[in-house]
Amino acid sequence: MKDYEYILQQAKKAHYSGWNDVELRKCVDMLPDIPRKELVLLYSSRWLSNDKPLKDSIFHLLFDARIEERDKKIKAMNVDELIENLKDENGYGKFIVMEMKERFDTLEDADKMKIINTLMLTTKANKSWAESKKKKMDSIK
Image (cartoon, rainbow, N blue to C red; front, side, top):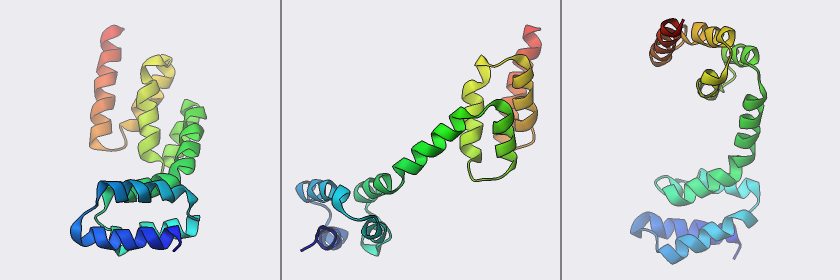
């Protein structure tokens, strides 16, 4: 029996009776040897719909490289590039905003103001954060 078939069989059993910890560990350990196409099939299987530990393991195998690539790309951007990419709606908005907030205190005042002005035009939470940072900057001057 192939690893994929074995894991699917165990997932079906676990769907009805819960996971045996030893079987779950065995299935998780098998995952790296399964081809990507079969991992996608497992991830989308109805037998894993409520199976967080196994589904999370599959997710990391499928997407960790892409997530790491995205993070490196965002960290390499300067403030102007971050702002431009935030406006592009490329799906990285949340991560770009997080990067802006993380860098904020280490930036020059001109870049800080660019971030404040940009975030004032986004969500309520970002606007509130930007207003508090602006007040703090104004009080220092």
